[in-house]
Length: 105
Image 1 (cartoon, rainbow, N blue to C red):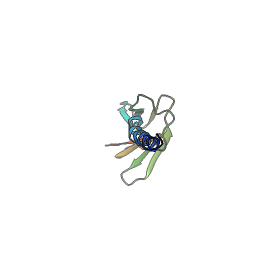
Image 2: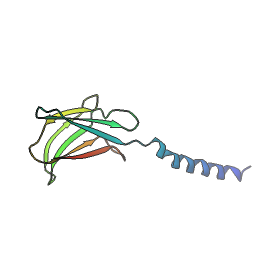
Image 3: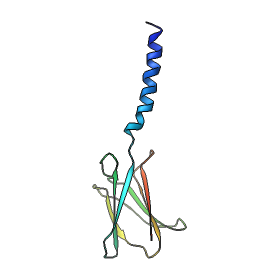
Image 4: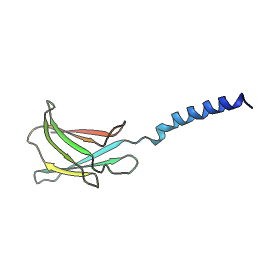
């Protein structure tokens, strides 16, 4: 019995490590041009949760920050559309899969 316990314990630890990937989630963003000079971005995780209060940043092609803000409780944020090509970056915190980017013309 004593020989079985360490092996069983090691098996359980390995199973938990491999199974932790099943709990991972990824942030996705949808972007809508409102046709009034503004753009709305919404963040949602693959698990169905919103990216509430996530940081949103717009950068130009050289990485210069054009605008910074936060999403609301629904994971949405509206900003004035830049006149130059830009990248939207939504950051919902640390961890893999908690940042999404989309380039816009």
